Amino acid sequence: MFKKRKAKVEEPVKQPEFFTFNYFPSAIYSSKKPEFIASVSEVSDELLSKIGNDVHELYPLHQTESFAGDSRVKDFCSYVGHNAWGILQSQGYAMDNFNVTLDAMWTQKHHKHSFMERHVHGGGHQLVGFYFLETPEGCSRAMFHDPRCGKVQINLPEQDMSIATPASNAINFVPEPGLMLITNAWLPHSFGRHGSDKPIKFVHFNLSVGYNLAKTCSTPVEVV
Image (tube, rainbow, N blue to C red; front, side):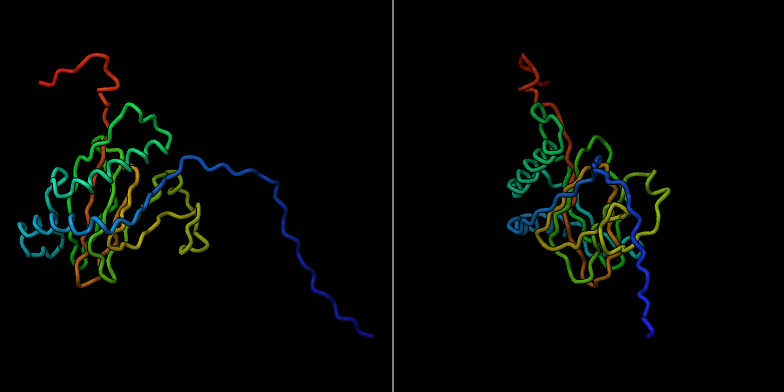
């Protein structure tokens, strides 16, 4: 009687067991705070109206001056600053003798085909962030890029670019109104080209750190 042969099953190659340690992470923090949209939009629209409606053919972007000191967004700024301090502390920095300062906060309104090139923030800034006000369908995505030049140089093809893995070169976030993103200023970020006929509008902000003189000085400091 003829006996049907079973196909030989190749056993997977066994690898030595290792413990995995993930160091030098790049963290991105998100929060949904729609309660600030009204107050931030009020100030943003007021400053954008001063710019006008003309859209540049090559750079279809409207950008306001900084309004970090506007009293109408005091609660928003307080929320950002308080959580920024907590983020740095949670990352392991000794923050007890430091204060966080919201250096600049400005609104960007990107029209169709506009984009933001990959960049980082210098000038002593520790954290950067975004707060989204208007995000039409088909709008740009916020992108964060691998900051490790050595890894990028020898990178291999990814198995599935739709899944975030240690092999990923970049991560993107789909904006929505009220979404806030904060990350370290050294992490490269960008925005893809805007594909909607309606503009995307968001706030971009920088935060720095300075000594809390009340804690670090034993005698009063005279401010000239």
